[in-house]
Length: 367
Image 1 (cartoon, helix red, strand yellow):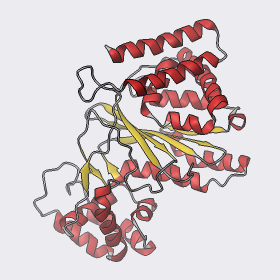
Image 2: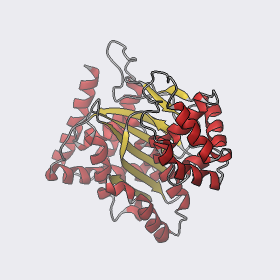
Image 3: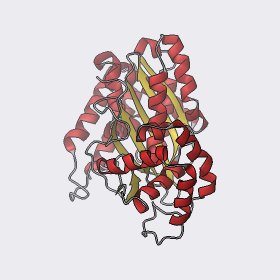
Image 4: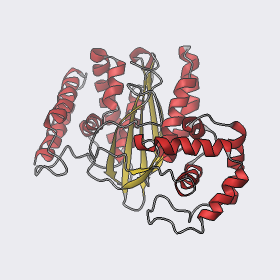
């Protein structure tokens, strides 16, 4: 396993459902999440638990077996919260640690990682960087219309990690879930997705696409080599151009003068490449969008418009649309959960109800 690398294993689109899980349900979810996690870690190891949580199929099935709404946005935030609470006090024994969460809790992730670093004699810096950069990529380098509001960071004592984060689109009332795993890919900004198809895809500013490499280079060069006054002047020129009718690259919401301070900071720090640029404090979606506009309209180097989403919750449709049901992967997800459930220390009634939820999910997908 390569620690410190990043692999975007999938993206799920889920309808927004408001409200909270009732206290009685969350308490049961916590207990069941703990038992299943203990069983999986005991048999396969903590790293395998990260792999499972980073796979959208398995994650969704896990949420189903815990008893939450099988297709809503709430399954992400509630499952992660139940898992964090479930392993509390057992982290060192399991070798599995959960940080972050929803809203304000997500912003405390670096502090939580520092605390665990001290407790484990583990350098937290690479983990903090991975946490920050995964969020930066999905909020600024990939601008797909979803605002991040949930960020869970999971890691093992060996330094392997996974990220589950979610963004919200208020217009279409859907949430999009992003999964990361610290295996296989060494770059945060070059094609971190696996080949998983999506049911709902649109257009996006996608600066992590392979075909965006020239744009990434141009953006970094512009930010580091051109003085802020010239960049601001170029942005003001762009505001008078006839722009292409794509919603994701427009100058209407750009305010060149307000970007001057950030651009000056970038120029003074001289980032060597796009990843360093993206990692700078203060560099967010508007800065990246402004530099992308300059790359395309001034220098003629366009970024990719390809939506990176390659996975939606559906395992496929009975009519083969958007693709045939992936029964093998789907069945493996359920079989592993059923096996872990069998080993969990729960009373027979609770196990029976959990198995029934899995069976209900199987029937819903097949019919």
